[in-house]
Image (cartoon, rainbow, N blue to C red; front, side, top):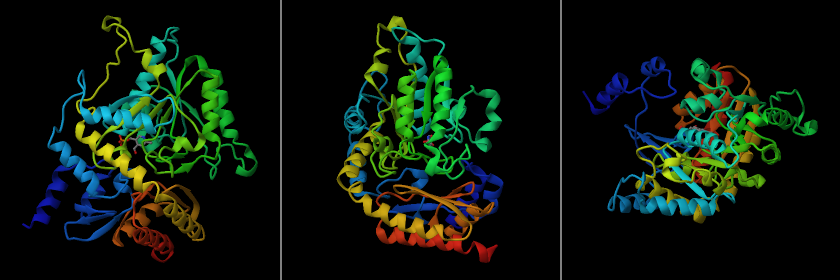
Length: 441
Ligand SMILES: Cc1ncc(COP(=O)(O)O)c(C=O)c1O
């Protein structure tokens, strides 16, 4: 049996893939990646694919980036892991310092974890505990408000604030209840209004809920600027600023989940910068390590942090942590990634965003394209034909491009450092795969 046949067999027999209908998967020939280079991934046969999902929205500078590889090598020669429960390590300290330097004002404390899900879970728990431990405690605050269509990860706290039926409904008996405000979804306005004249009425509904439930609300939780897994829903300008003002006015904390939109994805280092918003909690993961290793962080303010201080016997400690929290390899590669983002990848991003805009305009003219939503180097193409997004992604793969659908939306999220020629090829394949839907119907 060849090496390839053996791997295919073991994959089929043993590997359970996330978010993957396994019966369907097992019936098809698996695509097994062996290496990467820049924005390309290569399979066992040496075929090249453009990484149009940034390996699940996390890759920033491409694969096998010399600066990141070198940072890892250097750290491996020192130590690969040492706990930060009651101890510290050098890269964890340096990265915390760097994150505070680049994060929105007021976020001065960094709590590490491993993934986007844990970054949000930490924020949910910290915010809850904060209200209990303030000098004037508010123990009635036990609820959260999130948006329709929300996705914040797959642990049960995150699923409770989430709202994607096919992912979350089954687990309802296990979840806490969350208040739900309308998504700022201009293409399918939940209030049936037109963007030109609506004056962002959906935020009025959020304010009504916050005002009515302020006594029991711990926090409002949302993704700023783009609700990604909800279908790349782009909020109108000014929406986020108004949410920040509303939460402040009514004494409710604001948790911003930048797991998907952080680290340059929407054109600025953090999406919330675009509306000069500083949240009470900022959750980051995915692009934090440039897409190399699982590392996450929840940033918060001195005000929150100080409610956790006191003698150990007072029981104000935050009893939450993960074994690999503050992992030195993850922190070292994050430091190198942030440096590269600031010195090269972000400064070179604007022309790529413009290029993508031209492609977005072209896509709008195709039949079966209902809406095209773009922020930075992130594109959602909503198709009007049921099941078509999946077909388009399958077709694109045949043509050497890896992309994934979100229901009726084709998502394009290449590494921020994608070369111009590869961005052109990627978008050509996406365009042709949608155009050819007709002929292959
Ligand atoms: C907005 C958002 N939050 C949280 C998560 C969960 O992150 P992870 O998959 O790293 O747990 C995701 C994952 O896609 C996400 O898009």
